[in-house]
Amino acid sequence: MIDSVMSFTFTCNFSSFADLFFVHVFDFFDIQLYGLFDLFVDIVTLMGLRYMIDQEERTGSVPELL
Image 1 (tube, rainbow, N blue to C red):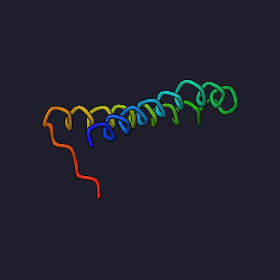
Image 2 (tube, helix red, strand yellow; image 1 turned 180 degrees about the vertical axis):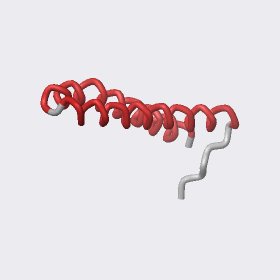
Image 3 (cartoon, rainbow, N blue to C red; image 1 turned 45 degrees about the vertical axis):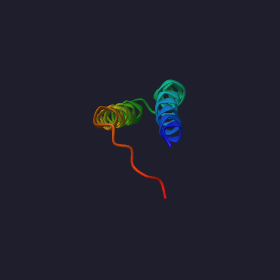
Image 4 (cartoon, rainbow, N blue to C red; image 1 turned 135 degrees about the vertical axis):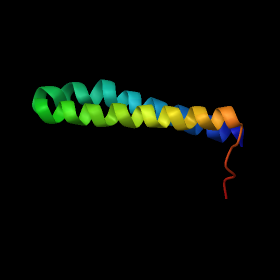
């Protein structure tokens, strides 16, 4: 159970970082203003995900998967 949560955590972090570092570099060259807005949205999303993951780890509560 905990392994699946850790795997999900790694996947969320990896996909967010991959989106930031690979997609947004080319997006910025293509559409600069929209690229900056999209980058801001992704950074806020990443910060929100990290906050929620940290809260789950602190409380030790792991939701049961059906």
